[in-house]
Length: 599
Image (tube, rainbow, N blue to C red):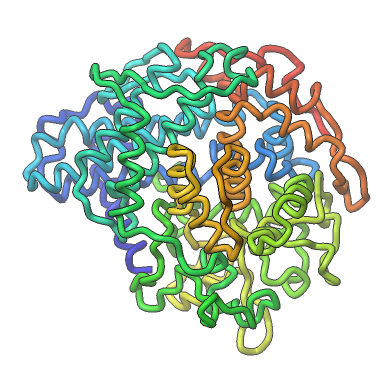
């Protein structure tokens, strides 16, 4: 917990520079980057403010790209109750209300403006060249990550790389991606070769994100940038990209960065896949039937990578490269007072918690929430068929048909409920010594010091990390780029599976699907491989429950393939942004066929 609190304290310090209006998109242009930031302390405050944008978006996770990606892909359905139409709309690639994701759009640009401010000001700060290089790399990484999410979500978004508050309009959609690639290449090439363990990104995170962005851009845009190009089933990835500075980034360059990350970063796979997920925390692991007698390959009891009693990072936490951090200081403030308190707890865990307010004993160790993202039955069926002995399935998915205590129906209603529940993002409960339950294991693990607002509060006490990048993905990217089996087999070995003898794209696609299931990554994989429409359509007529009664997952608004082919997976531009005249509405969102009504 110490490492989290230190970072948050820095973020709060950034808010104290009120006269600088760092949080105000409209006034960022009034900053004088010639005189602020000046000192190392100033620079740290602004950098923390850039990171804070991760928590800001977590305030309304249902509007974010990560949430949309989790529901729109074929890992999960929409879920939620009758009134949670946004969840169902995201799954169906439809819209619900005029500004369904406007907060996310605005907030990511706030983060970008903060990054632009620090990048412009760093030459004038009084800190060492090495620290400037590190700060510059972190700022460029975060700017690239924020643009990656914006452009994945909306397509052609306005591109700004200097501080400013004046309105800017859309340019060329591919220019945004070229800037993303250049920022990540620069961060990869210039940051010190030191693995960070304090919540900050490092050189190797930049190399990993460069690989992810490269694979998406060169695959998704391989035919061109029209809707017809992007939804074509032809897949022949680009091998070079001309960057804004006049240089060219090649596939071989990216392979070099990924190889460096694999060989020199110090990141590695944890010994047991289950140790990555919060249900193996020390307050829960011995009471959960699935984990209580389980051991790793060396006979050791399972141990969660975030088990850190005294603020000391678990030395085995070597796989998780980039995460959103949380802490005990969450409250119900959503931004009106300049402090987005609710963003400092893991709202994704709450949204993807078990719906219906059932007794904790009935769903142990999975806690309560809003029921977003029931796992799609087609994922489970494919997994059992293609890789029937893969232990990652049970580590990733809870099969409710094996429970004698779980009740279907979600209390006041549950839409698109399935027999399967995702474990990776779940809130996790714990038993107390007297046999009673607490809604969040963190309340027991990090006992004491909870403010009154979060004192044993199931909505505010989820503070385990939300992981955005793992080293396992880097190994799989290495195999994909080099078209060899090395990375694939390393991942399979950890899972206890036999190696594959020869590389194929299908084998790579399957391995990514199993290893990274329900982590919000599958959506952009489907798009870049040009297989999205067919994959999504397989969700139609899958068995689901409505108000606890069995039924089928019905097509809406023309069906999954039709909605994907009309939009290429881009979301609707918020109407408020269109009204400003800076963007035009995306294709597929201009008439009633895109509007979700109800289940």
